[in-house]
Image (cartoon, rainbow, N blue to C red):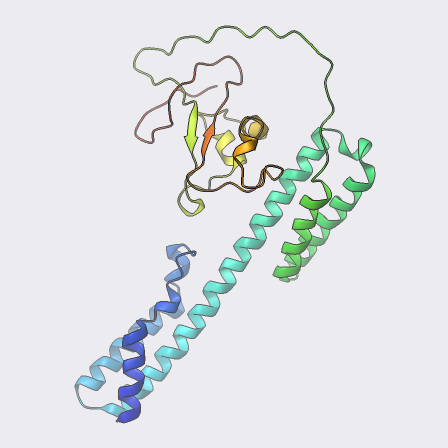
Length: 253
């Protein structure tokens, strides 16, 4: 009886709170192990209320075991997401390096970054998460000081922006970064939205306009919720005000 009461008190006090990692999405938190731990906890409570303390203790033991399995599952899913995010950031950086002719102008740095990226993919396939993350971050480090070619000076005439059509909101000139879990906000995704540029490859326009606001100005892959980013005009389109989720914007295309 004492053992059953003790385990139940532990379950009630903890509330199986360890499985509620707020960093994980709901479908990860509410995994099969967690749901089973909840079911077993209810059975333990019912058995205890009927005075069947031994059965209650057995159910409580199992509930704790499943709660621990849930913790391990959540931790694994978060590690996988961290790995995939790091590899995606590395791929964006490599693609940019190619766009500015880095394989020719910085062959050593680009070669090392390409090798590190391939290592990250290989480690990912082997489920060596920490090694994959470290390799992906080396890609960013190798390419950190590469700059694009400087174009010859040219006179560019930008046409005056057309007025917004009646009934439609002018495209937003600023955007407040939202948490990744709810918005998947990164420069690539923001640039790809129809009210921005409709083309994720134009992410660098946003980066160049907001570089001084970044926590690490030389790293475009780290943005923080609450940052207000300027969305510069890309083709003379009219922009003003802050992006509003309740408004309907005309697609830039």
